[in-house]
Every structure is written in structure tokens, then in C-alpha cells.
Length: 194
DNA sequence: GGAATGATGTACT
DNA sequence: GTACATCATTCCG
Image (cartoon, rainbow, N blue to C red; front, side):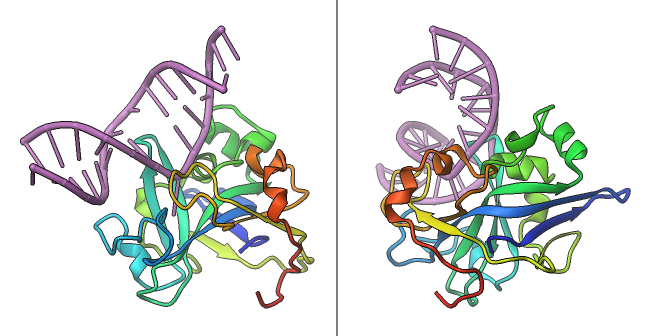
């Protein structure tokens, strides 16, 4: 999903567009204690158990929203958390949504990303490929230099290397910039089988 | 019904 | 680095 465009067409015609530069994977039950799907479906996580290609949005810490895309076949309940994006279009609108912040502070974090792109619980369960909020492949996108590292902010399953980010992007989260993740780094050319 | 706990962000020291 | 805002979800009794 790295390198895909995240697009939100707002009522009124404004477009928010960003390029995904950092994600984390969360598996279904079995081996990933940090996943919301780990103990089976709940009212909150039910979307994870549904069809792939749909957004799973939840409220974090009572304050923020975090957006995922369900990625595995129905029932497998794996999803990918959108952690950071590089603004491409609609930056001034994003700045308003983010309380005046700008540049790399617009969407370098899952809560920031959701706020900058006006994503909330109304998007939970929505089609991630065909709606007003959707992902698109960018024409002419070139291969990415991708690094891998542990996920952020967890107390369980802290060692699983399921965070992926564009290595040299200034728009990734601080944890990625600090290089703590590079111990497990490897390069993956976009489009190659993994 | 109750209590603990977050897939966070920001401000302050 | 530490504090704190803030509340739904989840699990346990």
C-alpha cells in the first residue's frame, strides 16, 4: 500500500490527496496479540472480519481516529493501519483541519493523518476503492525504497516487524526518522512479490 | 456494573 | 523524557 494515493473528495468539491509513506500490518487471530482482531470479532472490530478493500476506522485514546484498510480475504481479519502520508493536494485545507500545523506535521502519525484527511467513524466499513474517500494507484509511480521495523506504541507483540515505511521520506513519523527501525531494514522494490 | 487500558498527540521541562 | 487530555471498548465479576 505504500505509494498509493489517499484521496478524499469533500462535500463542496475540495480534494484532499496524499501519498502513503508509512503503514503497519495487524493480523487476525493467531499470533498477533496487538491486533484488534486477536480475540475474535467484537462490535468495534467487526469490519476487520468482513470483505477486504474496506476501511476500518476506530477511535484511539478517546481523542483521535485511526484508519485501516482490510487486506486479507473475508474472515482472516488482517488490516493495514495508515500511519503517515505526504500531502499532494489540498494542503491548505489540511492545515485548517490540523489547527494550523503544516508540512511534515500534517499527517506524520495515524491520528494526525485521520485529522488532516477528515476521516472519522462515518468511514468505518466503507469501500476503500470507490467512495469519496478512497485509495488509488498513482500513474507513473516509481519503485519505492522501503524499510521495515517494529510497530509503534504497543505493549503486546512489540517485536513483530510489521511497520513499513518509505525510507527517505521526511513525512514519516518521528520513530521512523530516528532510525531505530533500521536494524531490521531491507529493501523491497514496489510490485515485487513478498 | 465497574475498572483498566489503549494501534495518540501535544505541551511542557 | 514526562504529563495529561479524554472516552469507547473490552473483559471480568
